[in-house]
Image (cartoon, rainbow, N blue to C red; front, side, top):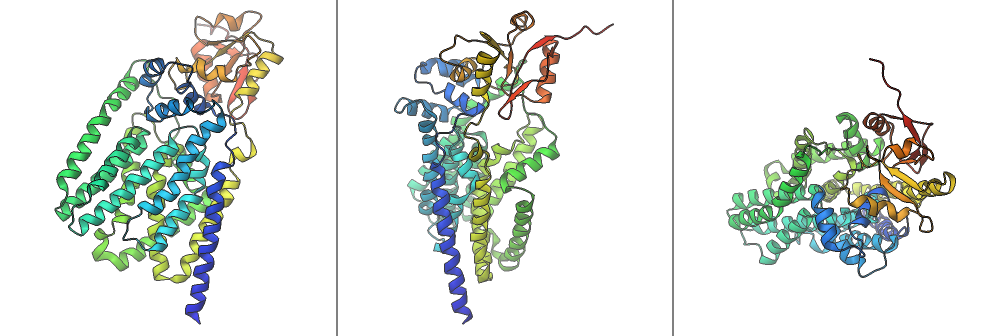
Length: 487
C-alpha cells in the first residue's frame, strides 16, 4: 500500500512539474515586443545594419569593456531580420529556449531519467532564465554556452573515471563552447576556466587525458587573454572609471535576493542545501570525490564568488545580474541534491513541483509583465519636444558606462522622427546652452540622487526644480549655475 502511495505521489509530482515546465518554457515567447531598456539600446547601437561594421568595431566595441562576440552575432542577425524589438528579442529567446532540450541531451549518460528530467524542468521553469531570455544582451547565449561546457565537462569526467580517453568530440565541444562563452561575458569566462581546472584535476587523479585538458585550456586562454588586456587598459586609463558603487553588504544581499527571489526563498535554499550536504556526507563520505556532478558545480559557484570578490577590491563587479551566469551550475547542484534526497526519502519528490510553483509565482511578479516599456526614454524625449518645446537637449553621458560613439546611436532611436531635435553631450563646452534662454534641458539616462550630486559637482550647477522622472531612472531637468562659495 505504501509503495503504491509513493508511486502515485511520484507520478503526480512529475506531471505537475512537466505541466509547469512546458508553461514556463513558452512564456519565453510571450513578451517579445516590449520596448528597449537602456542597456539594450547599447546592443542596438552596436548592431545597426546601417552603420559600417568597421566603424562599430573601431569606435565602439574595441573601446568597451564588454566582450564583443554577442554584438557581432546580433549585427549579423539584424541584417537578416527587421530592426525591431520583436526580432532582436527573438534572437535571444531562441538561445534561451534551446537550453532546455540541450540539457536533456547533454546530461551525462550515467544519469538516471529522474535527474535528467529534473534538470530539464528546472531549466525550463527558472524565472531568471525566462526574465533574461528576452533581454537583448549576451546573457542568453552565454548561459547556453555555460550549460553546454559544464555538462560536457561532466561527460568528460565520467569517461576519465572509467579510465577511458574521452571521445574527441567531447573535448572539441567542451573547448569550442568554452571559447564562445568566454567571448560572451566575463563571468562565463570564469565559469569555463573553473570547469577546465576541475577537469584537469580529475584527469590528474585518474591519470588520463592530462595533456589534452592542459593544452586545450591553455589554447583557449591564449585566444581569450588579448581582450582581457584590452579591457584592463581601458579600465586603468586616467579617464577610466567604474560607474557601479555600492556597499558590500547591500550588494551581497541584492545578489542573493536576485538569484533566489527574496528572503523567504533564500531561507528555503539555505535549509535545503544544509540538509542535502549533511545527508550526502553521511552516505558518500568515502566516495564524495566520485560525485563530480556535485563537486564541479560547487567549485564553479565557490570559485566564481571568490574571484569576483578579489576583482571587486579594485573594480566592483558585485552586481546582481552578472551572477546570472552562476545559474547553470546552481541548477545542476539543485538537481543532484533533489535526486539524492528523493532517493533517501521518496516523499521528497514533491520538492520539484514546489520549486516550480514558486518560480511560476516569481515569474508573474516580473516587472516587464506590468510595463511593456523598460525605459522612460521614449516619454522623456516626448516631454522634451512637446512640453518643453526644446530643439536641443544635453545628455549627461559621464556615468553611462559606454563608449562615446555609441551614445548618439542609442539616443537617436527614441528621438522623435518628425522633430528636428539636436542631441548633444553635456560637456563644459556645451554647458552654456543649459544656462541661457531658451534653456536646453538636461537628460540623465541613468538618474539617481547620487548621479545628480556628481553632475552638480562636475558642472557647478543646480536644478531649477525637482527633475521630471520617466520610467524608473530617466529624468529631465533644467539647470542654473550654482552660486559661488565665499572664500
